[in-house]
Figure 1 (tube, rainbow, N blue to C red):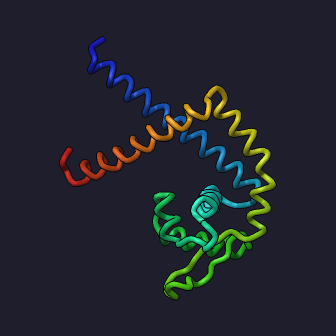
Figure 2 (figure 1 turned 30 degrees about the horizontal axis):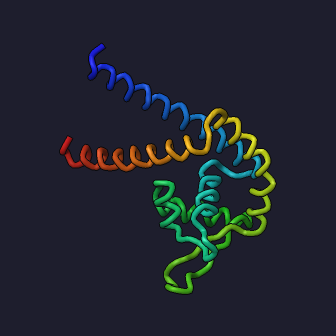
Length: 160
């Protein structure tokens, strides 16, 4: 097999592996969401807020950017999650035009109650991968994600 063919095969295998992982993660997120009585997108919004919040709440735009979704969808869903008492949306002390979103005690408790199951699931998913290998993989995936965004931009403006 030629070097070009080997690279093409490796890229194809990589892409299909990512598709498979993505599909399995969607199923896992749906399961977590079901346990809380919410939708998968709502689960991801809660997880993004949990990840991004450093104690002052986060903006809907930051959540939308993290999840690569439209801010209007985040606004719509956070209103629903607020109605379910899983989120608090308060006016930003820095600029009254913006809201800061944070998890409520109820949401934190629900998520914490799932933590043992989540830890077991993560251990199963990452079985055979040590911490150093996982850090290396994450760095490589971050680079591929960055390069993929650049490639997508080039494709959209007709450079590729």
